[in-house]
Amino acid sequence: MALDPMSVDSSNLEPPAIPDTTTTTQEPKYGGHSRFELELEFVQSLSNPEYINFLASNKFLSMPSFVAYLDYLQYWSRPPYLKYLTFPSASLKMLELLQVEQFRKDIINPGITHGLIVEGMKAAVEWHREG
Image (cartoon, rainbow, N blue to C red; front, side, top):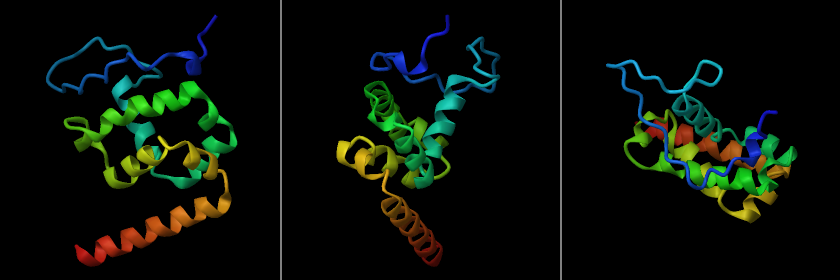
């Protein structure tokens, strides 16, 4: 019988090893991908407010084990992991907001989700103007 992925206690997990392209490692693969790759893709997906709304709508954000997993993923905000994020500001800000219980409750509101999308677009436009 397979374990429910939401029943895994991530509180004592160490972050995955940074991929070493110079050697072949025997790290377990999940669907052909390393834990590093899966967690990187998941953290990057958190920059999408509609995805966060989807997680809230499907009750993931009210599951203590999922909230603990989000807490565990905060290692992405530190070197050496930080440099692998494509959009670190958006991903890490959302990961930070997801640590707040009230935000996890409020994000189910489509108006708040839309507001985050608009603010993200404004920030992108401003960034391009400055750059």
